[in-house]
Amino acid sequence: MTPQEAILSLLAQRREGATICPSEAARLVAGPHGDWRAEMERVHAATDALMAEGAIALSWKGEAKQKRRGPYRIARR
Image (cartoon, rainbow, N blue to C red; front, side, top):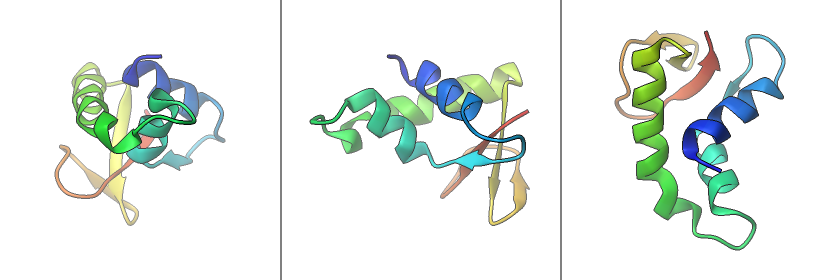
């Protein structure tokens, strides 16, 4: 599963307005015995690409973020 697929799959499983942590996508990509931390750069890149497409929105502590910087949560757009 690609990081983009993981992000979109996790969001599809959540209620409207819910968010995911990028580490959840990394864990899904890495699999049960994989190194999810090693997948974080790929997840960040996928997040940037999905943001550029307008497919997702980012926030932190309820505040919208215009770009990925520092901690963030991912939501459907």
